[in-house]
Length: 375
Ligand SMILES: Cc1ncc(C[n+]2csc(CCOP(=O)(O)OP(=O)(O)O)c2C)c(N)n1
Ligand SMILES: [Mg+2]
Image (cartoon, rainbow, N blue to C red; front, side):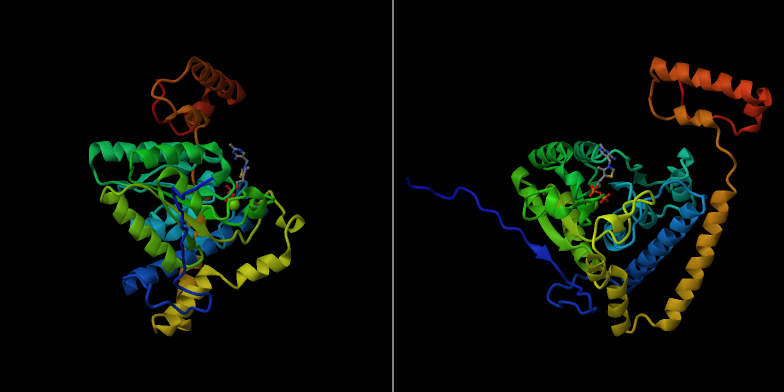
């Protein structure tokens, strides 16, 4: 029987900055020295924050925390290619995305202490808090992009998900719409090798995760996610395409989760130390430092200053977090619905009574006022 090829797919991978700090000059994107240094500082600060957050959790001063270490480039570079008015929705591991968007670290700490005041973004930003349920935000990102398109703002919506989450129906639904309506959306798959204890090899029979784009008429490519220059190039191209009406891009960033899934996990029980060591040699921060040092943009003195500055800045953020007044528990009901369903109205009334009964009416007056809409 005669057969003919009716479609063909090709998946490209972008690598610019190698682990030894050398660049492929042909692919080097136009990028200012200032931006390169900003990237380095941010990645350095994100890692230092991560280390401190783990210590705080281990000493009972923070709740369960998902580690970022190893994924600094995929987290801090894309936000630097956006305007504050663009939409960004990271995953629960996306604290680094928020810092690159200008969020103060004290709020991230509040969030991981279970305090909803942690969802505080700089004025003028269009950020949304990540959802702990995996993937549920992906269709919302599609909706945000659709709204921007209908309003003709030129705005872009960016959503992150993990390699494990890319197996969920949410990505299929989001990409189906985004492809069909040519939406200004960018989906970043942070392929960090693991979905808790499930390795990428067991996650999907697909050769790459980038090729999933192809089934939906969406641009797709894979990048070395520990290479900040490759992430920058892929992202700036995707933003330009989206703003020009060229539609959606799916970027698979191949990176590695260097630590446990969260502070509640022990990765030593399911993966080899040799695998972790191999990825340590591809560290995103070390390779940018090598590049900057070779370009005479960085040296040991600058590194020492940055280390000191970062330590005292994190100290101040932790102090601000720990000095935050007790939140009003009634606020957990605020800002979720334009019109609250009856069950929540009843539960809020019940909690109010409980608080009163516990310590008398002064308990309520000692707390800060309940804020936010609760009709
Ligand atoms: C809807 C839903 N199902 C299951 C979970 C439990 N869960 C939390 S993280 C996770 C794995 C996610 O892996 P991946 O998408 O690779 O992201 P990573 O944690 O590696 O960044 C799962 C299954 C959840 N949070 N939400
Ligand atoms: Mg993962």
